[in-house]
Length: 212
Figure 1: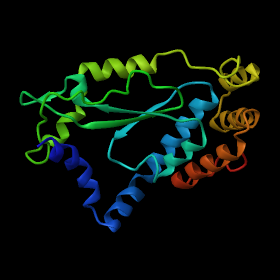
Figure 2 (figure 1 turned 180 degrees about the vertical axis):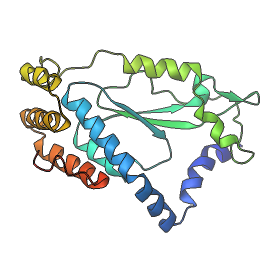
Figure 3 (figure 1 turned 180 degrees about the horizontal axis):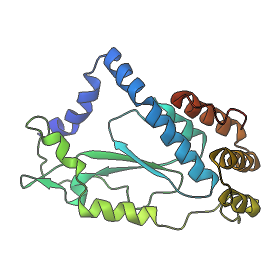
């Protein structure tokens, strides 16, 4: 029963035809491009991002989010049963995959064993784990609120703190994008920035920042 449960949700993805997967990923692309850009902005500003997905999905490797792998990436796997997640009085194992630009010390926790798992396929049960158990929430907050690990003694915004002040004083989107490009250039990430930004502009049909 445990083996069936652990395979079940992952098999939902695997059972889809190639055409169905490609269609769904195409529909998701604008959102995923925006998410990749938002995560990159967090990195440029010296901040943390944490992205979560099903432990059985390939979205971190086969979508616009794969661009984040060009940066330092830290991953963690969390089984909800290890956070006391239950449904109908039984443990549910649903595995989560977290990714961040900072070490994840609290979100790496797997099933300790010693119990069975409720089979989630059918009866509308698969949507239930969308509700986060308190322990999982606590662990997300613990990792999300940690002081970022700095590899160099610089302030938020890169090696030039005046860029952050400049960014905060921007009045338009175009101005902010220009400053973000300056920050990316100071970090040696300007090519990644240009490419990711262009993906977002193309996905949204935006032309306002073509000269950024």
